[in-house]
Amino acid sequence: MKKQKQQEKPPTPPAEWVELYSDYLYRYALMRLKDPINAEDAVQETFLAGIKGLKQFDGRVDVKYWLRGILRNKIVDYIRKNTREHPVNNDDGRDIVESYSFEKFGIAERSPKPWQFAPEREFEKGEFWEAFEKCLSKLSDTMRQAFVLKMVDGMDSESVCKALNIQPNNLWVLNHRARAQLKACLESNWDREED
Amino acid sequence: MLTCKQVSKALAESDYKELPLYKRLLLRFHITICFICKGYNKNVMRFHDMARAFRRYEDEKTAEAAPENAKKKWIQSIEVNASTKD
Ligand SMILES: [Zn+2]
Image 1: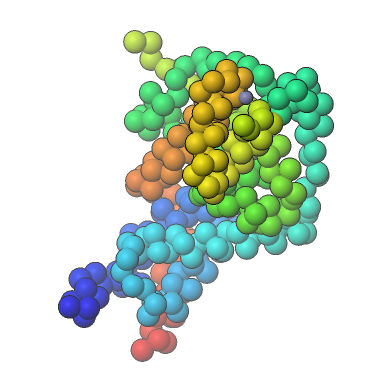
Image 2 (image 1 turned 180 degrees about the vertical axis):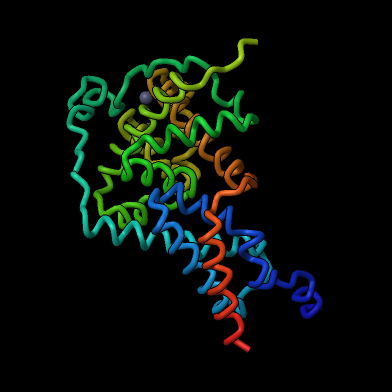
């Protein structure tokens, strides 16, 4: 029974990886690292680590996502290395913390301006995500990485802070600013169809 | 009862997933009765939904992305490393 299960899903042989997964993995790395050279190297290291670890592949997830798991660790390594060499300015969010709403309620904006459109209605459209990606790429590296690692990749706060070499309070400030900038960018760049 | 400050902190860091159930319920209760936290929560949740939907989009997108010369390089190094394994 067990043997059968293992045979159910033999891993895709490494010879097919580039054709099947490299565009996905490269795009994934580039979105997070922004530097094409680093992204290329991270993918290369992922393939090699994948070959080495292929024996441990248990077929529970698709090879694509198994490789992505390896890649994500590589990406975090690159980010960590980079933030050790170039620590980010500690944005303490003083302006936020000193605002009335924050002192009173602990909330940065007492009544954030309502969205000019409902983004969730656009989720099915590829063009929306292209606009979203463009807006993401306009954020500073640290801000983008704080948002993507935490919100998109679902990493826990502690690991994100370690990778970015920042304090927990800083992560909060970064994500707060990322939300505000993304919202503003999407509102000015996304022409939804009037319906 | 939770204060607005505690609520917004939990929401902003999205640590509520790690909170015990009774705290999550308190949190939800607070949000239903407090209009200040309600508005804030709605905006934060929107970004959670957006991030989740973006992840799906990222996973399903199939367009080419990697440069051809990078692909060639990868293919070569896979060939070398996979063959030395046997
Ligand atoms: Zn409140």
